[in-house]
Length: 132
Image 1 (cartoon, helix red, strand yellow):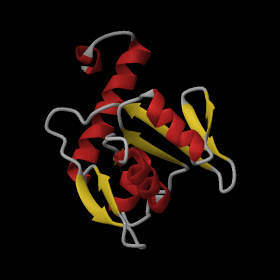
Image 2: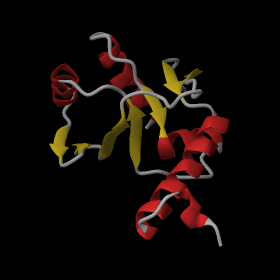
Image 3: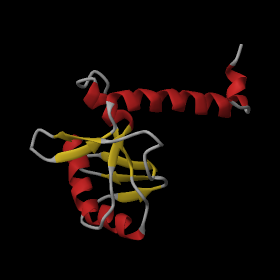
């Protein structure tokens, strides 16, 4: 999946779109695959050009995700840009490609923010709704 993300990143760079891997794939990388994911989440701006590249790579849109059938890869861009203070870094994939990925510490903060966000939505309140 890292290689697939790197290929997508290379294709997007050709049109000036910056891609940064986040989510489960970043967690899997930083935990040496102790965490397994089934999709690729990235931060990248959405545009008609970016969608055309995903189609050229064989992905088909299915709601908010893009799916490649063989091998099955699910791709999603849940955001356009890193949050303030989050700085993607570069790693090298096994094939030697460079891939931008959110650092482990930032991924921890992302996961924490996700928990707060989803708990707020379930409770219908703000962050103070988390207080006992």
